[in-house]
Length: 610
Ligand code: M6R
Image 1 (tube, rainbow, N blue to C red):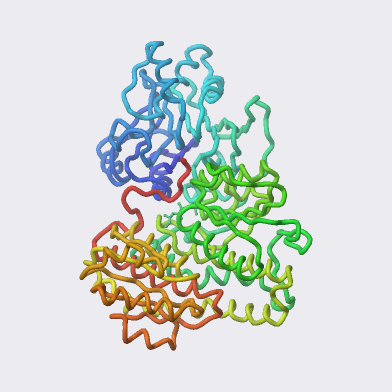
Image 2 (image 1 turned 180 degrees about the horizontal axis):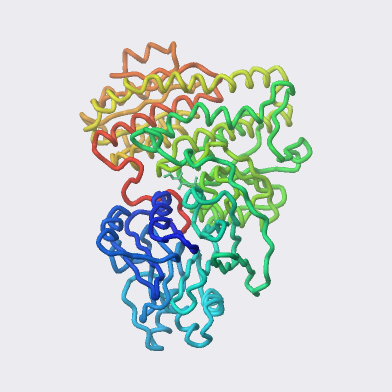
């Protein structure tokens, strides 16, 4: 949520901040603003997209070589000019941008009001800047004032702070919200995420929780809460800036859908060497001995990543016969989960920053459980705090709706499940060789599904006016149906619900009427006939049926209005192929309805608040 960029150097700050914010707009896009120092701090901020801010900046010249910028996803107070960041103290001498939530802001606000501070906005963030102001008046030292303020603040924050009276520095601080420092030559940067500064530098420091940085043109000093200096390793970014650009596609989402054959190959093949009959899971030790000590597995994640968890649960339980609980992270820690040294937790996250997933990980670690993370963003908090990390090699995912990251997560889950199965001798060498062969064929099978893009576009236009859409499936298909329904909801704003196919007649079938659409997933062949019967029940009640089926299962043609066929593969891997048509279907409906595909309303890519 919310994107932060800061610049200090010898170039004009405004264009650097705006360009950086553009690449962070996926984090939030309901308002934006910048503060730039030039003799004094000047700020421009506005409700709406970054383009509104750009228009406003065309009319005001904001010069200066030091500044901070922000793109917002509102938590406290509606999106409005006054609630936009940066927030200032009453004399406009201190400016602050914030990502996170200040949980005790009401108490702090009352205290500050009692001390004569007036508040303009409804935000929690304004409390932070007023608090810094309060302490600054006592010490005339910005760093001290920021330290004093963060000692009082409960909740999560990434802050960037700029002060009129100390214009040679930016102060950055983080707790439970991501923040990085970009190392330049004669210039330095702060940002919420790498793409914002990648054009300027590949060398960065990853701030950890409760670290504070003083950033000047020539220096970066990072300290702990006791002001002890921390010598950090420089993190070098290896991926390319064009990986975070649209490259001729109409939308990031479409580009990312088309990247999937490569992403799948990149995630699978380094872990599946052809000269060894085993899986190499980076540095993860999942031996027989380790696994025999485990009596329970939790897979915890949010949103799309949680549906990867459902696939993982299905595969691990079926193959390895170990009980697996797949849960959404927002609920997990409030259930008093039973965690101990015999628990293995797998957390799944594209961003590696999702607040609820991180909290689940920390809870598990505290209880002595071993935590493996499946993460896409290298160096993210979850990847650093987990005992082990299996990176999905999907590259930066910019569209808010996850596509390629989900496919890469499925690949990682296939690898983990097979590895566990092999170590527990549930999968033989011969079976492994067969599975490996199939995994190597997945990228070209995905290509084949993508070739049907035009046909899927036509289907999207045919069903664009559907009122209620039901996604149904059994077994693995049920897990995949959840992802299909979520995609349609989040980018097409159509009411879509996933159901276990057999559950429909226990209630939801009452909703079926003419113009309802049923998307029937049938690739999990063990339960194919049963799913087909459930599809017939719905068809008989007036719904249109769009089926997704494995090549060769042509009898579904007689029941469904339309069928999308996907290539045959091993039963374990059908989820990945079956999901591609769901992605394209949602994408083309969203485009047809004229929605902002990459930045759907009310959403943000990285959910770093609870
Ligand atoms: O970064 P994460 O994978 O932890 O994010 C989890 C969810 O917020 C994310 O998958 C969300 O559901 C996406 N909008 C799905 O398209």
